[in-house]
Image (cartoon, rainbow, N blue to C red; front, side, top):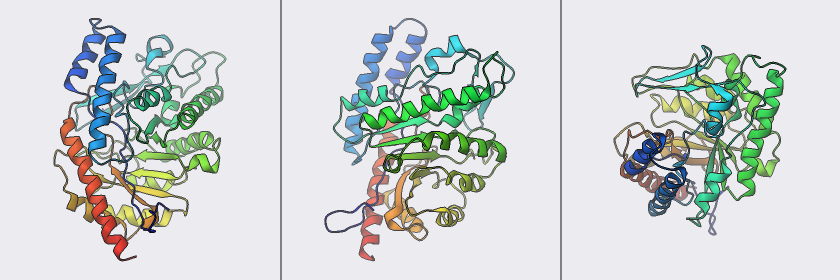
Length: 365
């Protein structure tokens, strides 16, 4: 339970992670890709952008910050991005393509063609850079190993079995999380990829793979671990998965960690989801419900957020309740679908609305 000195219950409110890059940084990334900007020059611009973001996040009233994932190529491929041209192929027929119907774009998960599997970049590098520019607690987002397990689904590399690959993957994923904890991350959040055509079998495999990694952490360490899950519905109500979000959540709560960051504000029937959560919730769990919709240009009011929290409190014990955003605001480094200023306004509304609900709920305790 999070309480103050007078035993007041505090409802924590946390970012998911990503924020839009500045227009200057997006242009610099394109220039760097074209070979007209050096890697060192790009890194300097990224750090300047990061410094500005951390300063502005502090001004929103956020107690815990993130680096906005400003220097990641994307939230899911950062560990292997630098190895793409050496160890992976995008040309094979078995490459998994994710289509975002509302964004009219596609993203691909490459295929491993060279063993052994390894990370080129670990998330602790992003964390340590951010720590240079703020004294606030920092959450670090990492990609769940289950997502990266999709780069090698068939045994196409000679003398390299799927099980050998999974051993290598789990070792690297553990290192990714553990290094962040050791470097002082306030939380480490696993990101699950929602835009994959999940079926019951694949979802079960995902849970098993993630738990293989999570079981390497003790109970105290698991208190600092969380998972972020989005619904797979787009704004036009098209679904990318065979499974309903309701069905997915039933298995997600089998993960061996404490914190769950769940999309809710954009759900058409949030009370159906809340009712399910109330049945799945264990005493050591905390559920951060999404009260902000990053896909919607509308800036929520503090009162709208307050009302969502009050509704959730009917299903989730106050000492196990938190708030967050449905998803990251900009999971890819070329995403300019929402302005940074609007993100700050939404974050501010989340903080203020959570506090309004907290005041009301503490009065009736």
